[in-house]
Length: 623
Image (tube, rainbow, N blue to C red; front, side, top):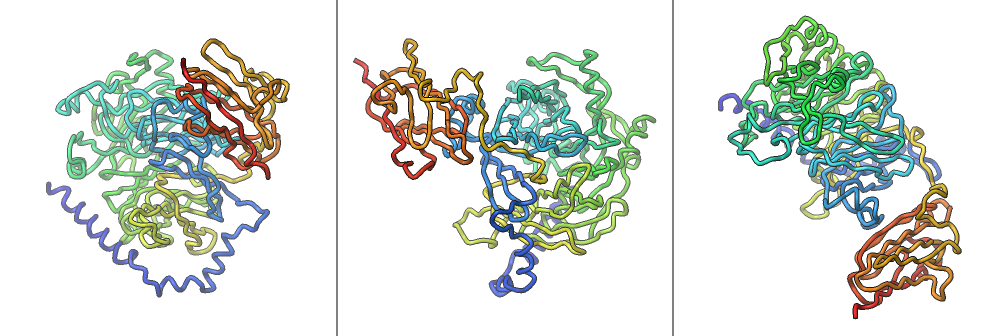
């Protein structure tokens, strides 16, 4: 009990201090928004019509299950891309492909997006994300900003410590937040230390098929794995991740998971683990190749760190990794070179759960404790390698030098930042320029919408001698992490090209048809301004007639090969809607379980005669 009281007291004091100093902005203070400085700031974020933002911001949508896309520096919300949750506006979760990907799940908790990389830099081709709520991983194609694959991650319960990819996208690693028995079998919490595990998955990516695959898994100890990062350059074969609850507590974790003075950073060599798999050093468990560190030795080490760390971030040169204390008012800088030397010399303090523990003093380079900065969580970097750490309790961003530990600058934010994101700030070649604080609490920052508040994202200009908050943008709950990429790295398409090999696609009126196969009806139709044509050879080409109980499969091709001419397809009263983008063929399947007359209409405005783009779905009742 004595160990946690000072930490809890410090957190409480820090929270009160943050409330006093940052939470009470009076109307008089707000009235200063019209001064010359803020006018200048407005000019910095203004993007005139006809021009485009310099960066894309991809912000995780947390328990919305979605990805939020913003432009920087304007901080304008451009698009919300559904990933793990249904979206009626686009029909995501209703069309056949997305419905199959989502399965029976109705929501997701999207954490920690990660771009595909080449040589440690973003390549702008794909985005990966994880679902903490239902233990899934997703792949998004950035030509179309659409999800191509979702997989369930077995033996894992909440891949919060992900996604992070290696320097050339060889792997995406997904450690778990919650320890569970392998296979999620029932086991009493009294057997937690013996039967529970924190499994990490190594996921590979086939870019030709646009598919994810689990290559192998590692049965780590039953701890919680919080955040992670892949090595760079000299450390490119390595990765690090933070842990908490190394006490292996099973109740009241706020207290019981904060008893030990130190938890661990897991340091592992993924190339060595890959070789172990090739050499057969694994067990087959629940259909997965599983490495058990206490049995299959090598490649995994533990580094002691201040209790309950949150972020661990690798410097752009790949020489250091920085842990943020959360319950300790300090950041700890560790050296990869010192860690490699300690491993070579077997300079271990012992083992924990069969994993060698490196000596803290053998790996630690320095502890950095900015004055009165409380609650460090996450660190990003600029083009000079300077570090920017979020301080959750003291509600600020602190800039400091990883080489010397010197505090260089600090700026208050509103309020309680969790993650932050700098322009390409976790790559080998950060841009500097901008940093965005992803604040957990907005309080009085925006017009009130009742008791439930938006979150807050604040844009910080890094180009001057001092950091300066130049824009504040509300955002829906709840970004946990984000990535910012140069806009010109992403090459989108505006129209889907014709796919003559797609048997479901039709590109002219004379190809349209309705085909009955027993109790299945297949419709091969087109959408165009401003009509549907399901069978051009009949009297009413915009009518579909089926029998009650039929399985209906509608393949709809948008033959308007023009930018931004998207069509929707909805059947009134049948609770379904899909979107068909220019040149795209989309499919929806359902059972005609209600007899009667149901209008069909286009849900996306497409022309002056949009209202006239209708038809009928007629269902003959059973006799």
